[in-house]
Length: 275
Image 1 (tube, rainbow, N blue to C red):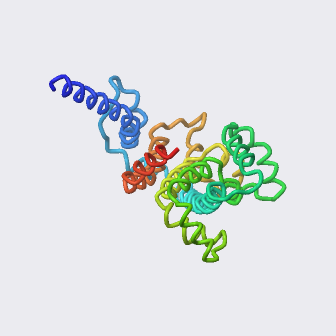
Image 2: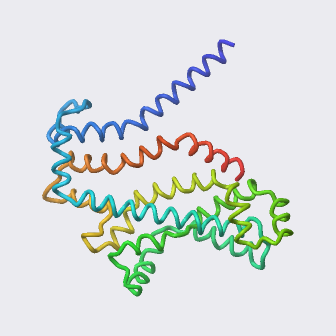
Image 3: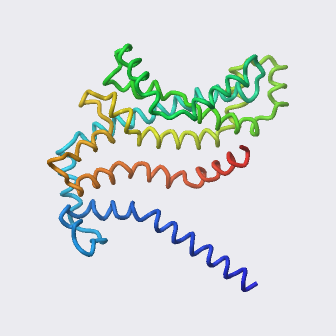
């Protein structure tokens, strides 16, 4: 019994240590956002909060279009999340519950696209945006991200376990077509899976940096991550300003995660067990 308790205590100690190590970068970002760049070079390093937060925030707002870029990012993240939830779930519903010629081959090709590096698609994707005249617009960020292989794979695995075949067969006997089966039978049963996919998609869209950096050439349409990158220049390396921007950028995501953390973790575990 004593050995068991010692093992449990050691496990908890390791978990607590891991949690503290994971949280330290966020804590240090918050600390440096309340101090000046000069304070960062102190020996030993300063690890307590300072009085410069509002001064840093004022300089941040005067340096970049903070609220405009946040609004652009919010529009892109919300639109992308809504489109991904619809297109991924309806495609996954077809893969999970319908037999059609070439289904296995198509799903295999879909998984193959998920394994390819994202960088391979950047140039062809940029050429398409040029042809469409979308370079510099928010369409170039929203439309290419409207569906993805991971979301279809995740929802297919979830739908296979959450939507009984017998219920769908009864719906077909009653004359329901594909879309009515998806909307009235499938959708109510897969809401937890959609919640998980929605949170992960929103976070990914909010934090996306590479593609917006390439395609957003109009300064008035920059997203938050790209706008923050303008703070870090060769001739003006103000770390406290950069970390204040990083703190502002991560706060909305932290609020979303805290509000939905319990459901987020529960649904992730369900998906893992079903997979």
